[in-house]
Image 1 (cartoon, helix red, strand yellow):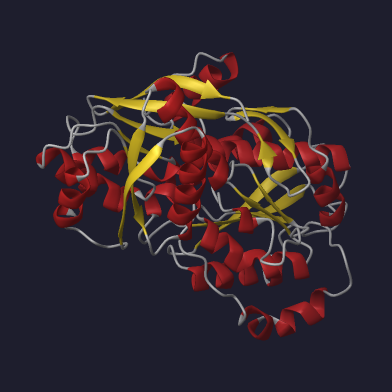
Image 2: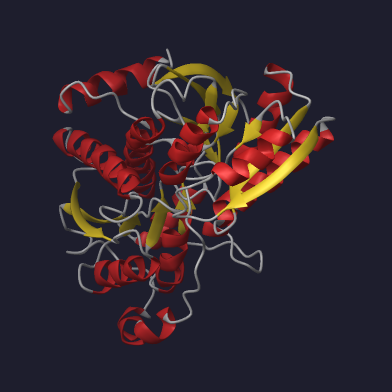
Length: 393
């Protein structure tokens, strides 16, 4: 997931004093090599506009840490979690990683939920040689900078935006047999732009025609005029890459205007609040590309679902719960293989990850620190997400 990417040029000035104390190279977890803990920072959106994402990831992280620690930790070392709230703001995400690296001396940081808030931490992670893992940052720029250079200490457990857009287009053409479509995207969001571009490219390459392209801006609440223009073009399908806050209202208003064609989005839709905003009936005949489904019959998935429900009063885990959970196990696997809490050694092992079985798929890390993994297509039926199919990379 990502909010509009922001410049973090001020970080070098803010952080100059910290860097002076960290310039000696790779660091051990707080307490040194003989410590019985692995200091883990968590920098998430626990309040603000996309708090639903961060809160869900935090639940997954807490569950994984509890499991690992209960089973003796990683080579006898237990995770010690230090959590900060970035308030869904890039500047706060930067402040958070400064605190975690300079004061708390963490070995690794998990977060943020969105790409912009992860990129806001990337320079500091690299400069201090602190592993940073994004559970939900889907922009390619999370792990690869604007010059095309891989950010050495930054990784992710989510797939990237172009993959989601491609999956959505292929699903429209191959499964729904769609020949023409409209795109309605948030033009203030790089997340939506990346998805739109990959959807359009793949859809047109497959012979489809884009009959309308319209835009909205985050925080808009009335989409009727634009939806009326889209309706006039009579599309057979509408691709809506965006976040649940606006998407819920778009879906509701589209159905009120008599637009009954399939509506499709990506992981930004995945929030329990979407149903509250759109209404269960309006969400019928809508689909989203996501990281996992709690209804996936895979044994590993169902074991996770059962354990999560037991811990959370019967609540079924969503994709952000699963991504938070998987990110801890992704890190723990690398720590075990490194045989050390030395962050540079952990970084090297993360980059070598191959065929690691996690809840959201079997992960292999490529040269850009992107995970090669499956995507899941979900359908809404009467307000509930229903597993449709899995798509291989």
